[in-house]
Image 1 (tube, rainbow, N blue to C red):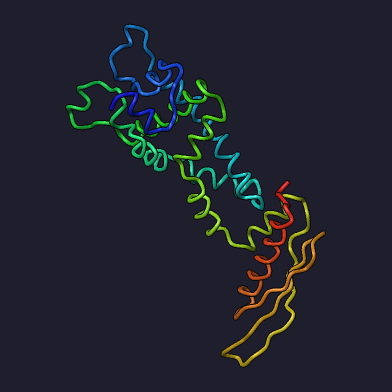
Image 2 (image 1 turned 180 degrees about the vertical axis):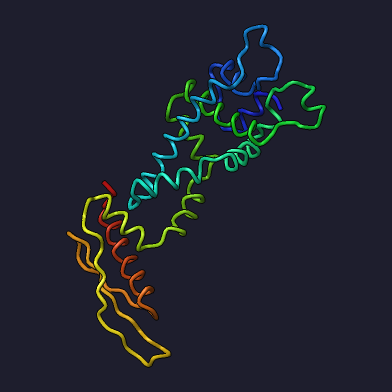
Length: 231
């Protein structure tokens, strides 16, 4: 794949073409005798830029999540599997310059090589176009809303509300059972949750846990509507 085609795939045109060439040059590629560097230095920079961009988006998209949850979520997004997926999507394996003998031996571009090169490309974009250009690349190709949605789905409402309280150094949410109605085989629970500084929310369900989850979800919805964020 030509560099021009690769630029079309990633949605960014380099002013300094040598940065793109360096980002797509593996350590095995010829040219070291001419002073041409591999992507390793750009990979180092790109790793930091990627972490910043993802952290910035997560802070915006997960306003109720505390530091611990954000740290775990970032780690689940920035890994070789997701980086290799992005690499395939934009055509890194076909564009990466490696020693021809490596391709002939059938090893080709490994997942780690592709993942490292993606970080190098991000570093190159950052140097060439600045933070905003790197952030646009990350937003476009990492498809963060889909990844964030999966994280939020796995982050239950009670945990989210607890993280929000801990982030604000507030007492933990207090759940109170209001009533239990119906026959033993068909109970109906009503629960109230109180968070310091916020109006109480009432939830209901076929179990106490379900009712507590409902109450926590309503409190979270209220906080989001009010524009609250984790400190």
